[in-house]
Length: 367
Image (tube, rainbow, N blue to C red; front, side):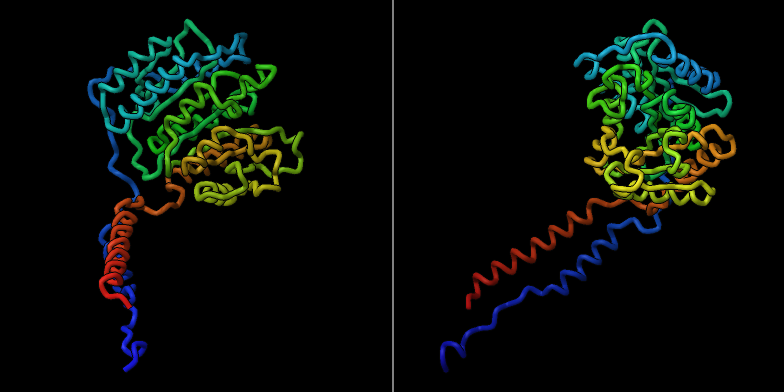
């Protein structure tokens, strides 16, 4: 018999058993029938709460926006940025792990920058919050930051932002209403402390600054899988052809949170436009700094422009606020489970085993 006739057939890696094994591993790794919410993380004990209306505290914040009152925006130093980043880290740990020690550390460190961290027990609702704001001896325009003291039960971490207070038609109060209405599903409300056009060269436009305390807060709480909703407003007389609300993720795409919000707004009979890279380009937020950072980290960014027609109509603005609140409470319609990182790791390990085994087999049994 010839050498060609005696040639042994090439062994083929059995791919079907690999697929079956991956299905089995995935089945046992994926948390099927997982509850749509996690167990609520209650505020830590040992905190001295100040019982008063949260809206009253927020009114004080709103009364001190530079631009609304005389003042000068002060550029933070590198040390200021570092300290504020540490403070935000302590607050994040304090809330997520119900750790009173971290809250105390944040409070002590805040005093060094003439900030105060106030634990507020809202007398109107009984909900608890941490309010980080400049004390009354300074007004540098660095912003105020509110946090739900009870950890969010949602599987998706949500942050609300208002980078253009006053200028964007009461956007800071709209953001506040959504933040408090969805308690504790929104972990933080970030509010700039200065009106956007106060600086002649855009120094006070926090949505377009790569470095600010506002951006430091944004980066501290933005992470993979979270959702950032940024509230803005536009003058309908300057954009007469635009719908009541224009939504954008900043680059013409559509993420799940944006789609869910658009659906709820339309169900409330509010006309909605979505920036697709071309349509609604002037309100598309392509240069928004927070949006760029969020997309780079796999965060769902939703830039919401609200027409002045909606803002100054009590019925319409309530419909808007309720639609966004409901989207958040419904977790944007996302699956009730979180991705289990064990699945791709185990799958990669199994595939590697079979490829290595197949390679070694081909060496020990040459043609």
